[in-house]
Image (cartoon, rainbow, N blue to C red):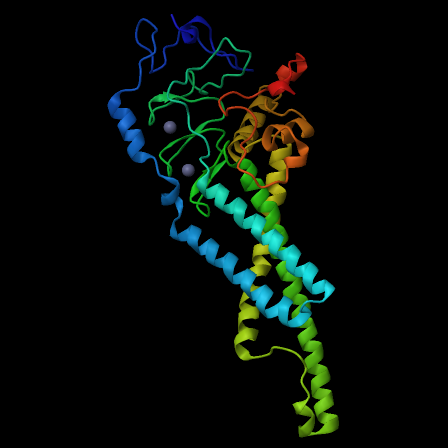
Length: 348
Ligand SMILES: [Zn+2]
Ligand SMILES: [Zn+2]
């Protein structure tokens, strides 16, 4: 008899009926292996990393190239040149853009996490096994025909289950999950820095241009038409002016939107919640209050513990854009009840 029947799932505030058969079990309790047909179907649905480079992803890459080239070629080099502020701005902006681009590519390429073919819920382990709200059965994906680990959800776009799924992001053509959540968080940090930096440079250059234009006019009035021959050092051709205006028009809403998205994701990360879990938590909280109880997010290990779980053991590497996934295998996660029992999470 399998573990599934020997012990009901351990869920706080929920009682799962004993002996409930999941769709994957046979009558004698032995797990049935995925049929060859379902495995082939799963392979057909799997998209390679190259297929994630959709038109939307290419439009983001084009926007990267447009903003970087406009800011460097129209603002930094002609205006600040190779002065100390010029070199610092060029170096800083290139670093921010490079890191954002690298994180973006990691978000697209890195697999967000798939359920192992041989995954079976280990209800003997001291872990929370989530169950369906109705019926108390162990979480099971009808589309993939396999049990779902805690925090795993099925993505309709990717057509498969994704470990610790946060959401499907069309801008990266991929799901944000266990495998690429750190890259996604770092992407938001670096891209917010880069667009805010772009916005500041473009605004400063526009103000400088307006001031110089005003001075140039006054100079022309004083000296007559001959004074117009005096160069202002500004690149004020219509083409560059339009390019900078278009870039500014993109950077303003982008900065606001990305900073808001960053704040939201930092808020979630500090609680070790996914976007899906946040929405589920709101519903669970209301239900718990109505029944006179309380709801706690089981994976909240405290700010420091949560950052360790998401960004890795070494804090020195938290801001390094590498392709490291969150701690653990994405199938089992430590809970704050583990911490209460003084059981170290992932060897911390
Ligand atoms: Zn699924
Ligand atoms: Zn997806």
